[in-house]
Length: 352
Ligand SMILES: *[C@@H]1O[C@H](CO)[C@@H](O)[C@H](O)[C@H]1NC(C)=O
Ligand SMILES: *[C@@H]1O[C@H](CO)[C@@H](O)[C@H](O)[C@H]1NC(C)=O
Image (cartoon, helix red, strand yellow):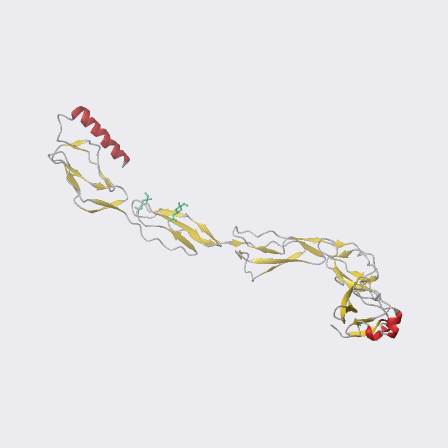
């Protein structure tokens, strides 16, 4: 098309400068649109000359007379001749894939893709050619497959589904385990990826923990000073009124360290001499509370006076590792009040 245009411009120029006066009634090479092709390179045509029309490559004629005639006035006759792009056949569907195209005529492009988990084999696009055929046939979408998952030394692999033969499907997962005393390093699961390979395989390594420490005021199930292997456990407990806090059992972890140790927490005494306390739902005089021992985390209440309203109320406090704070509102009565006027103590009068 571009070439035709240039020739036409060139010819007009020549016509004006050199031959205009003598040949005013010749026809110039026509400029035709719509993918029509003119044969030859002739620039001027005498009146009466017929010029046959054809379609460019990839186009087919559809209507109108296939020629134009140069008239006496130096103009070409009109024509309704048209060229339409050739049609390529409707493309075959891609199994497990997709195709994208806007049209199926000459120069149209089809793009092919495969679904996730499938690999495209063949060309990923096709072009409708001048002769009405596609440049390539549809590609195949072949499922991604991995080999069997690699097995670490001293370890084993368990597939999510049963595996037949020596290939596994994309997306299949495998779980690893190590044979004791080996511990697993890395991810415990692997997957067959889109690349057809397995994600990283973990390792099985020997792991030992040093002899476990003893805990104050406590004892443990293993007193032997030896190295312990991965996943071995040791139990702890506390002496007497000491209460264990934390896990009663520690385990040798895969990093060669023990899990968090428990500790033994001390009991408390209720530090009042005169008064009543409320302990485990029982209201009792302090001298009757024998032995005067509250275990770690246990709660005990003392009685306080609401002076404005002249009523008594119980206020609780908790034993935390040997410390039991008596609430500030508690007032220790004098021994006279305690012995002679005990009816007026906050624990005895009307409760708020
Ligand atoms: C086909 O792919 C090409 C290149 O990625 C893109 O430019 C074009 O728009 C695509 N055509 C269709 C119909 O999806
Ligand atoms: C169509 O054109 C292409 C490219 O020029 C050629 O390879 C192919 O053989 C042609 N097919 C037919 C059926 O003529």
